[in-house]
Image (cartoon, rainbow, N blue to C red; front, side):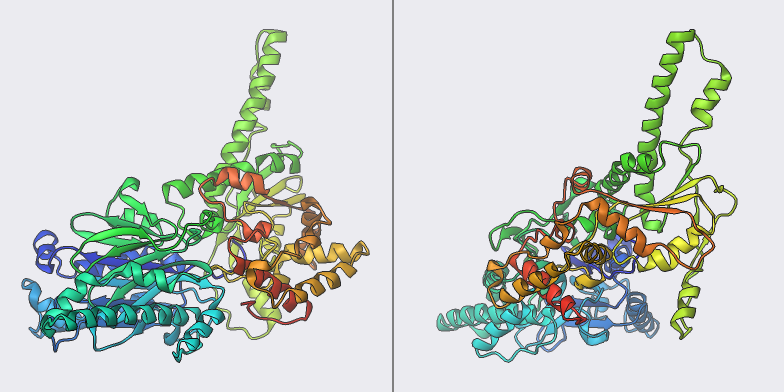
Amino acid sequence: MSDSIKHECGIALIRLLKPLKYYWEKYGDPLYGFNKLFLLMEKQHNRGQDGAGIGAVKIGVPPGRPYIFRERSAKSNGLSKIFSDKLEEYNDMVKRGVIHPEFPETVKENFDYAAELLIGHLRYGTSGSYDKRTCHPFFRKSTWPARNLMLVGNFNITNTSELNKRLVDKGIHPVFSTDTQAVLEAICFQLDIEHGEIYRQLRDKGIAGEHILEMMNEKLSPVRIVSAAAKDWDGGYAMAGAIGNGDAFVIRDCNGIRPCFYLKNDEIVAVASERVALMTIFEASKEDVKEVQPGHVFVVKSDGECYEKPYRNMGKNKACTFERIYFSRGNDPEIYQERKALGEALCPRVIKSIGGDFKHSVFSYIPNTAEIAYYGMMHGLRVYRRKQVKKELAGIISREGKVDEETLDRLIMDNWPRGEKIAHKDIKLRTFISKEKDRRQLASHVYDITYGVVSPEDTLVCLDDSIVRGTTLNRQILRILGRTNPKKIVIASTAPQIRYPDCYGIDMSEIGKFIAFQAAIKLLKESGAGELLKEVYADCCAQKDKPAEEMVNHVKRIYDHFTADQISEKVRDFVYPKNTSWQGELEIVYQNIDSLHRAIPSCSGDWYFTGDYPTPGGFKVLNNAFINYYENKEGRSY
């Protein structure tokens, strides 16, 4: 994705199923869990650079000793800082003789994160401020172990204000900060109810206080707690919680919008936002890693018992396609094949764009995340060309009985799809220059180009993951590619036109910033149908105070006036770089919806392309987004 878009966070959970001594004896590592948590988070570093946080719960700690810990950092290097600082503390205690690694009990007693249960979070902020207070884990403290809760999540809740109102109506005084705080308060409210009922039952039976904690651990049900707390949540989410008694739970939204996976063996339970992170860190096969089912909660009890149960009815599976197009790491076995399929699916339109002239075409990609799709595109182009050559050869042989070497060279060598590395990410330049014009000029040098491989008679086809706002395309990429001086540039997007805001994780809720929307508005005004904007605005205002379940997508009417190709042509006009020496032809080619779903059969979430939202909250956000656009207001739409 050439545009800078913030997106889904990353979560991680580690639950050791054996005593620390086991890991020392088998792996020579008393910090086995702590180190695995770091690696699991590091392998998901692509999911967040706005901050990081970790939490730990020690199980079986005697009264009077601390057992629950949290550390957070809002620095861009927050992950490495947290772990390096903690390891420094550990090494210092080893040096001073406080900890003896060969005696794991001294490690658990003295090092905060020598714990059986650990959670971690990588933050990409879509709301709130950017300081330590907004970093996960969010923490509710209590002197009762089973009322302590730490929560990490990859989510956006669209009805946070309604959830807060319900809490207020129950007599609670929530802090209106983020959806994370609202979710934490909702779970803790149900946790308190569950804990209180169990405590009273045990007390009334005359159970001695020292035995209540043990029996509390047995009777406490994370499934009941989550079922009561999350029954009205609207949004996309994957969350992991650590309760102070040692119970852990992982929940996923009922439409499966946000991804979540787990691995369990006889030594460990591990949870992550991406399957491939678990496969790599624990040397596991694809079959070993399971997906948390939509609408389910996966529970690890304090005694190590694991089970997965539904907590609300499953909806239609609407897993986010952007996870496959761009966000998740491409070395996942399924994602790798799907991204190749996305590139191959563009071949018919790319071939049409170059007029079938492979001899005078050069194929490349930008940014680096489009590389896998590029391989798929090149494979598709070569298959197409092989079929052409085979047909031509068969015709020549049938007519002349043989094929001379000159003809072979013409058919194969001179007209074969040619791939080149055109754009190189040079260095990470610091934007310390204050003037906007100078910053843009600086940004244009983030990429360097390969000179001498594109000729003035060539068409340069460059693959991109997606085109969101088009600003990077206009200000940087096309200016960079134009320096190769091709006859024509074709930008091919593996994603369809992004037309609607997202509210389930990706930071793109302002519809007026989407280049496809801007193009549709421009076409509407040029065609003399600008009054439709006022009509759509009036209809959006008329349903603003209706329940989200009763809202409809009025914005679709704007797009219905034009074909996708007409919008693509207008996008081209918007992004064509001005005031440059390159004056060639430009074409923008988008993936279509049908091809998208054929390439990614595992995910059907496409609301940012189609406007078909999986939850009522999506339509409410779209409604607010258009009203904000029409009233010239900036900011999130929910």
